[in-house]
Length: 363
Image 1 (tube, one colour):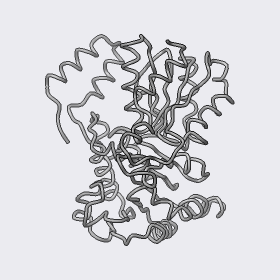
Image 2 (cartoon, helix red, strand yellow):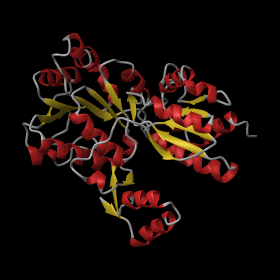
Image 3 (cartoon, helix red, strand yellow):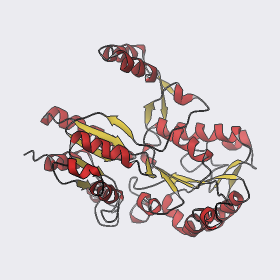
Image 4 (spheres, helix red, strand yellow):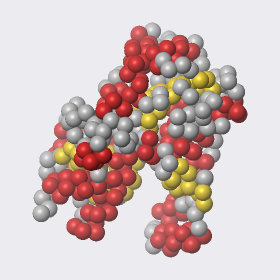
């Protein structure tokens, strides 16, 4: 955790001074001298939940002695011991089945996949055992478990390690699917997921682990949790950009370019949850701006953007659209290994700006 300078805090105070009293109060309450990386947020969330509830434990490859492949579980073995932080052999099918069985007996496992691509080895346990048992038992048998780890593309990890599983798991009744962006998202959503009596798939982004974000005093509380609802990251009036995880960052950068170069005020919505999908927030922003694009780093077919568009078309928000919705997605190819091709395969601020210009008919 690092600290901002007093000069920056004075700048924040000056910027919010022109707001109305309630907004000024809220802005100053949320303004904090502290920042936290996503890695630190995830680590502290798990540590607090392990401390809070003796039934919670972590299991996965290299989570204990090696402190996690991405150091997200750093220090937890030393603090909680081998009973609570469990290293496993390289067998996702084995340790995931073990964890689901433990959950069915009343424990509360956190399963770490070194990559969600490896969850393919264990998908039967996730989809057929964890997700469906509560329904198939007539509501008598719960399965309180979290499946977490890095999801989607990173850098140079090629086709078999770059897939985004948000739409895969988001289509399964019985699962909840969360997609944090900031440190505050990661901390609040993970703590909520661990306490949730339902199975939760928690999709992190490897490239965000080392990113630092401002964090409020409220979010540092051991009791801090977040609801599974979308967040307006930036207010706007001309077009809505609905996105999740690392593409929130790209969308905010795109919004800045649009403002400076074209005078376009873009509203950026951070979904935070894929299932349940906060369709009310999406309808609200469409009614406000009358234009919409979706942004995701996955294949174009049958994706999160396609689902959002379908739900908008089936809702009252359709009558408020002044132009067709456009999707910004990854390319419809297995992720290339070569850096030049990999860069072309996923959205960036420029591709988002291009999509907004097309929707708004800006030359």
